[in-house]
Length: 123
Image (cartoon, rainbow, N blue to C red; front, side, top):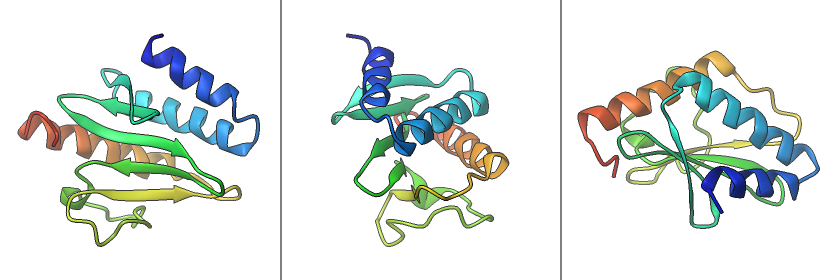
């Protein structure tokens, strides 16, 4: 099964707010950079462009966006709220009532893609 179909399946199995949030984040990711590819790694949705950009996964009380090179990214809007002490990654945890700052999130995704272009492999 293709990565896109596995992501669709994951979303379909989450009929609550988490599935809707993943759908919205997926749309934002592709709007930020239409060339981003969908992959399925570690049993979760992974988005890549010249290397790993971000993973999006559902947990019991949140949806997490994990930026693989997040420690190297500018975050002027302070979107990162999890994994702040990690050596390379940074994450954003979304909860049911959270509003998504789409323009700032798109900027962060674009910065991650730009980072990968300067360091192809993104790892």
